[in-house]
Structure formats: structure tokens, C-alpha cells
Image (cartoon, rainbow, N blue to C red):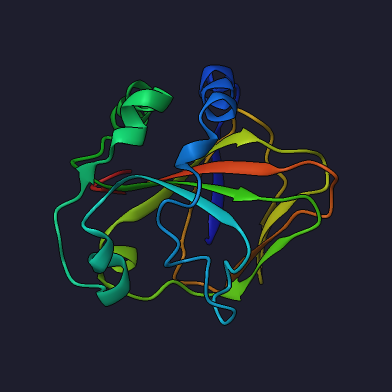
Length: 177
């Protein structure tokens, strides 16, 4: 299995409005999105929790820490709720991604220590009908408030052919269900 919807209707509207009020956090760190060969090229990220920026580039083991954006955006309570729901033992990175209208994440697998060490969970902050998280054997058209698990070791991509941005909070947890 590569992707699984876990729950619906999580409270994401406050986070969405906080993101609208704080555009300064987008693209503080661009190691995933700035190089034309990256599958995430041209998209936007907020790193809410991770190691030092060099850890993303080198892929070395590290202990993740909260970045200032996490407090301002008010994501910690929702991350804590997710940790409890999946019986998480260790919290890794927390990344918020934005795919603009008509853009996509190109097909890829995620390499590196962090991608292999943690399970990946997503909380859909905003989306529109027609956008999809895709794998060769499955796809998920998520709605705002959906929570799902995915395995980034399989080839995956995200399409957003809609006129609306797609914002997802990715939470990396070890020891989940």
C-alpha cells in the first residue's frame, strides 16, 4: 500500500488563515524547490520543523527542532494531535508545501536518511476537486481537513490542474501505526 486516507474533517481553517497572514515564511529555505532538476522546482515550502538547512542538502542524520514559523502559524497543537492519533514515538520534520494552480510535483521517490527513517503523514490544509496525490497503484483526491499516510519510497507525484493553490502539511513520525 502506498497511500491511505486516515481521517476527515480535521480543523485546518485557523492554520490556513495564519498562512494567509504570514507569507514571509514561504521560501525561507529553497533547497527542495530552487533547482530545475528537482521534482519540487517552482513550488513553495515552509520548514516548520527540521534540522539545520545543511541537513536537507547532505541527508545526514539529525535531530529536528521547531522553527519560528511553527509557533506563529499555530501548527503545534494539530501536530500533537496527529502524533497521539497514530501513536507516534518520535517527531521528525514538519513541512508545509504549496503547489500553485496548474503546477505539479514531478514523479520521484524521496532519498536520504530523513525520508527513510520516518513515516509520512499529511494534513490537507487547502485543495480543490481535481488535484491528486498519485502513485502507480493508487491516487488520492484529498479535501481540506483530510489526514492521510503515504509511503514516499514508491514513485509518487502530485497534480494540481485546478485554478486554486494546494497546501499540505507533511508530518514525519517514527513509531506510528
